[in-house]
Image (cartoon, rainbow, N blue to C red; front, top):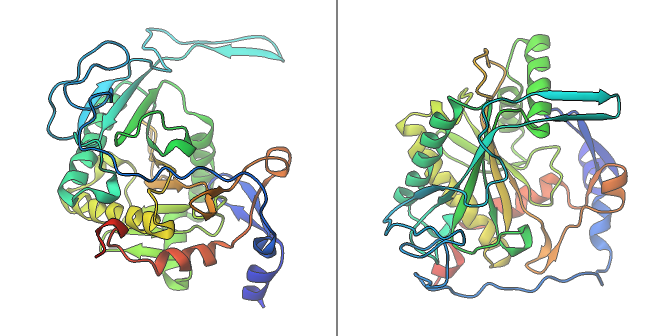
Length: 347
């Protein structure tokens, strides 16, 4: 009966990380589509582009010159959204007018010197270099700032302004809205159950199996029960890890392998360089006990039916609550059945 409800009728699912609900409407996949169709830009790129401001040796938009880097390269964002200031304070003029000063730093991580590679097409060694940079930057910035947000916007449809494979790190003196929700709900769960929310959820889904996409000895990728985006996934370690800086060498190499596999599966879904926003959530760097936190990465891809049709979060989603069409179980099955050899390498 439960499976029939999930696959055939409208229902709501609760997200224990955010405390919010999502409306699931599986029957809506049958509706015709006469709306926006995105242009497909999955064409080959050169290994080096003289006009790219992220390629080795090139001048960046801010006037600085990139070194001739040979592996992952990190630099301070020339157009940072956050500035490093000495003092921060909040001000309340009245119940309606509140504001606060913030301090922070923004950095860019070029995953590879090659202009034509994404994580899905990089080797495990090359992906490990990216992970090393994530860890080193988090360690450094975490000594100064409360929150360190690692993320990647991949593809034009996700607002990426440059196709060179890269991500970003924004470190801030404040805890932003999304991790603040996760912090509260994970702590509440620990107090109530004396266990870690995402560890317990992972144990449940390992037994249930229907939402698992890919796994190895240290990591699991699954479509969470409460997923909002059509092919959203969450990447979780099997053991308890609070921050990305706590990984050992085995965790790193295993993570590189599974990142390669899930991004290959994404690309293979529609035979296109699959767009997404991906980011890490781990315990804040505030000196407090963080036993309630479990490190995890979110993948939020916008594509819905094909390489050219995406999910729009508008109307009801903006005014009421998030809504999805295909169920998380259906999405997981489609991703699970895909190969982990990149479609561009098939003979």
